[in-house]
Image (cartoon, rainbow, N blue to C red; front, side):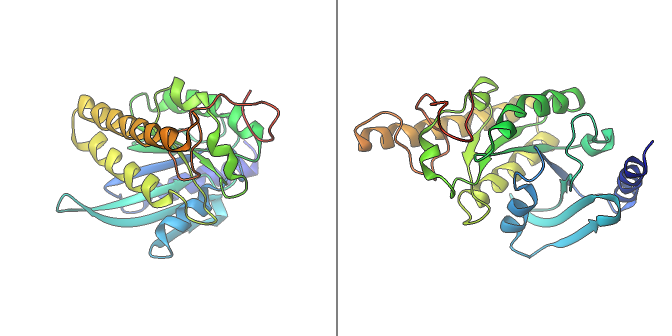
Length: 238
């Protein structure tokens, strides 16, 4: 085992030794897609950073009240350990939800989503997953494009921006709700919530298409794109 791997394993052990939160939400995706920045934007500095920088692992503790009940939530960030098959199994252990991220400006991060998703399902076959495309502020026109990965896997999908805050609160709020349902309610209730989110996306898309007079013209805040993707654009799927 390399020194880097040993430090990461020690970080997992140190995290596990801390007081357990009520819920655990993990961030997945390639390095530098903006996972940490999205969390910081959502938490808006109102959090207790449990930073284990020595071990290349960061946990963000957040408290929330939902349905008249208080929950403590740990958001787990890979902090540089984003290689496939590199994450310790404890990273996934007892996770209640996942936010799977890619960078709209880097095509490879989209291509790698399937590998991340396959690895996640090997450890967590049933937890809810939200897929997000970060950096929509860099090229808002990308919101007009269709990204088939989320649709093919029946995942709620959002365009977000850690830089200007687009959809950040919505994504994390929905992740928290799904995590609570995953832990406390039967699996069919969790699926019902996911289907509700997918239906909401369709409802958002339809009136915007009619208003624009052309199919697929969505704003950067829209949660789903409907236009087939043109592979000539930078950063998009093939």
